[in-house]
Length: 353
Image (cartoon, rainbow, N blue to C red; front, side):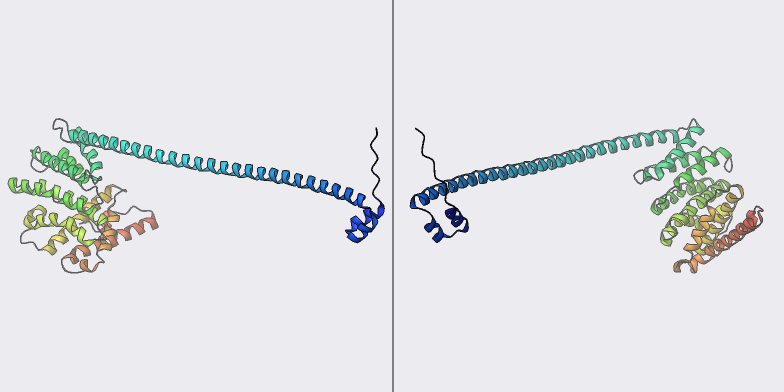
């Protein structure tokens, strides 16, 4: 049996429904039509709500998935950051450990090198090995940790060299050894180390007092003036008190034993300072005469700058400063003439006696 067909909705009912006009809708449709229409609308409304609920659940699910993904990304980022921090900390720990190991190895190598250099410097059977040892110890004079040790070794080597010199005066091999030792002692930019090296001349002075070898002592004394006083003028020139502390042991020895430089007592501090400046000038000009690589021009310039200090401009320092200023001005004039004419300048132009 075929179910009865549903009569179509009258146009007036459709029109009133679209216009949302309740009075027209009530007048246009029968009660049966309106009940049927109300049921259909309720069904449509229920289906719409069902779809909205499903849609909200889907959206909520998507949002939750998104938040989970973001949280996962954050956790991964934090984990990566934490791993990187741990790796950096571990790398730093490893680097510190290797640095300490390297430092220990380097200190061990340096100690072994110092020991081997000392063995060479004290080899009484071979003069060539001793010269190599003095040159190697010069490197340790520059090292603050080994300066005192190297200075003691060089002082003892100086005593041994002088003791083995049996000729009157000082022969060529021993002169070369003494120059190498004093040059090594003076190879420092630390004024306190230079002052300690200058005090080593007391060993020479004691030998002179015992044997009275003026020629030998005078030659060594001039080496001390050239190397130590000259180095002090460069290293300590901006601090006159430090310069004086280096020069003092040498000057005091000259005052007590003026025959070292052919002088007679009594010798004042001012005369001694002036004579040391003259000795520095003379030995430097000898160096300039034979070598174009001498540091003496710089020594003179630094000494002149030091003489500008108030405590150096008068009194016991005036004579010494006058000597150095004079030779510096003459040397600069000779250098200017050399550049202008191309003719080599003679050290006599700078005032060599």
